[in-house]
Length: 231
Ligand code: MG
Ligand code: ZN
Image (cartoon, rainbow, N blue to C red; front, top):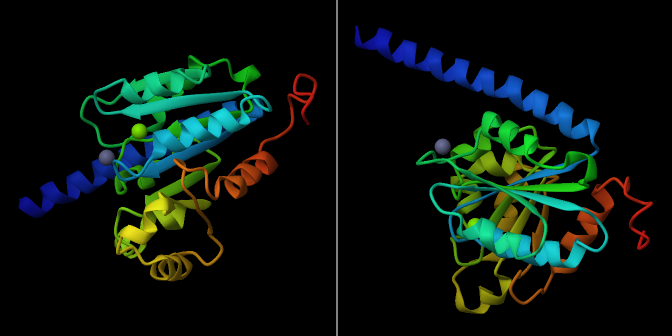
């Protein structure tokens, strides 16, 4: 009896993920139709996703049109900070759920002016575990870690690093005061995914931000060439 119940649970979980995949595919299709490069930022709480976004937007908003989907369990604090950058922001409150799913993103992108956007950031709920399992229809997942965390995080949470196309080590200004071992972290990342690009940076002091910004500029399709004379 018990075994059957467990089996049923597994089947339901598979069905949910399957339904998520389908909607994610539709999201990806819609975003591609409008040439919107979409990045899904995943980290534990407090790693600095919102600060990184604020600094990234401030540096790039003259050159491209950026939108943000802010995932948060209950509050709108992060969305208010991003809105201060005068970009399009849609807030998703998950009301307890510890990750965003493709259905939530479908509703959010319907509220965004996709035809105008070049780059869309999704700030996922602060959680290094299950956001990695949910395809939202993004082009790339970005794994974010901070020097205030343990350098063994990649080994402990390998899935997010396997799924990501780039990783950011934030708060490198704190490295002299922390036990964080950069070599250990980089070695672990290499073991999980040899080709994963890692950007060590400090969103607070801007150290190392240049390489990350250059990478973004290369990725974003230049469809707004007509309006962005800086290109
Ligand atoms: Mg945040
Ligand atoms: Zn979750």
